[in-house]
Image (cartoon, rainbow, N blue to C red; front, side, top):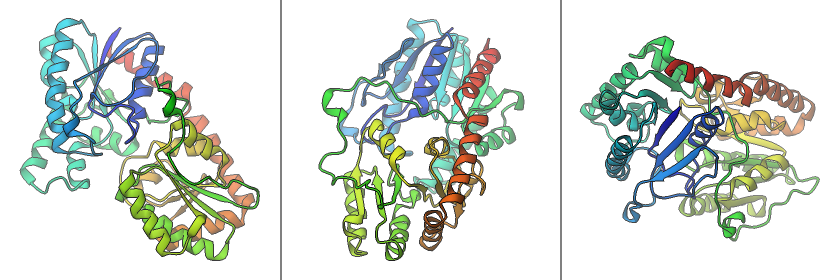
Length: 392
């Protein structure tokens, strides 16, 4: 089976890695498909047998490409449409795996080329317009909702990446028998064609102190407002007052975001106890995860489950996460310590985890068992095979 995957995202860039696209294409190829992956011009290529990366021209004037909806992405998506059309004219694809908004134009092209359509639904697009404060126009939001409903109804398979989206899709126009829940639960080493200088960690960050006696609290991810990094830093100030040997390691963020959070940490008097790395390679971030004492996800709001949650479940390390729907559709109090999304709530959860290692180890063990039972690679592969059955 030959599949065209259309992913309107910056693929493997310093601003973030859409790993779900990589793993979807990787596993589809391992299951016997030949995959052409069409994506934006910026980024680094993957090196996977059976997957060919095709890029639209790079438009540097539109970079950096922000997270979430933007007019820059809209302009790039115009190019994506024409490249999708060109590939469909040159090759015979049995299926198109349309990620996010690319389903809108792939839905139009479907009857012309006779392919099966997979809607890879990583979020609700009208919800994104609201959550990222892109617009308050009811007309624009309603238009996206209409396009999304039409796409849900017309797709041969809808892949929802979290329980909330699964519920949303089945309650919309998608026939329930065509909707599949496939969480973005894989996190193994990404095979990317990296130049030698990309193998190093972030430039110029202070060394991380992993010595015995210095428990390390690790946050790794973006520094967008909804991630709650500022609340975590305020929480750590409370922890440090009671556990002066503790350390907070913050991995990620663009330079402007990191500088803003550094100023907050300095104002709270955290000094060298709070370490910022900026962007690092995935390998370095994974090494930090393995060596940390406590992992934390301080997200303030959201409905989609963060990709990192699955790696945290499988890590064997205790996790503190905020009690919001983004987390609780996967997590409960048996596998982590759930807290209120406030500095005080995070501080209490972190202190309780540090002061009761036996309880923390029990929850971490439960988390590993949950990951193996519901989210590990064999489960993921089984679901991809089911997708192939539905489109065959």
